[in-house]
Length: 310
Image 1: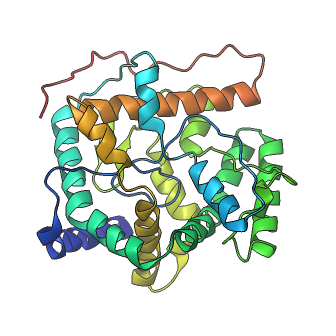
Image 2 (image 1 turned 120 degrees about the vertical axis):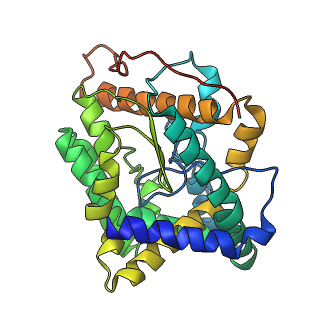
Image 3 (image 1 turned 90 degrees about the vertical axis):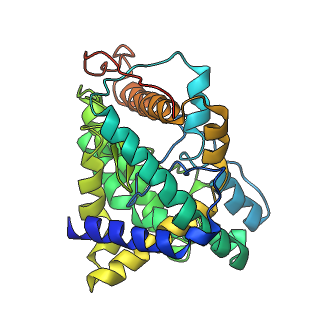
């Protein structure tokens, strides 16, 4: 809780420091929640096969482009609409606006400056490094789902990338020779696999869209993410903030595109998030229980309150 509050205070400070460069025509960036997440959820419901290349930089770039946390919002419009109970809509809309301003006034300006200063291959390597550190959460999730092949894959990836990938800066395990792909799973999906429904929709300040079921990832990411154990506490906060800035620098523009296309961005992101999480749970259920019908628990039966556009 102390780290969560401190992170919020840090971003509010950044908001003031960078408010002069705010872009009033833009919005926040959706972000995944597999490492300490801020502002928005992380994303792509479909797993894209890794591409191989003889050029090491191209190989790293392909790994980034195949990241499963980039395009979940775009897939929403290709699927039938899925409704979710939203009894906290006034609070959620307020938190959405807070996160929206936080992105534009603080996170995006910092990420843009970082983007200009650091070449893309280096930023992709940093992303790989932090993704490698998030191994414990994915490994434990696979074990809890009785996906032992997935757990073995994650163990192999972590070992190979740590030793031959220079501490995880590179991702040789996903190349065509080994083809060990990162397991797109977390503790929230684990509950979904065993029949726990979303519940209602909630938007957390800084951490973004979630639900009671998926909020377990906040605790999981805290206890299972090694950087949070760095002492003193502000050092761990700095490392995690750097992870966030680096990740944002690789995805600037994705969120703006969806928001500009939406009549009501709040509703668009709510539907996109629920769609994305349900597809993830369905994919994991299909892998672990091939003979089980493809059914995902419906959200709570309360009627949906869509509200009015901003």
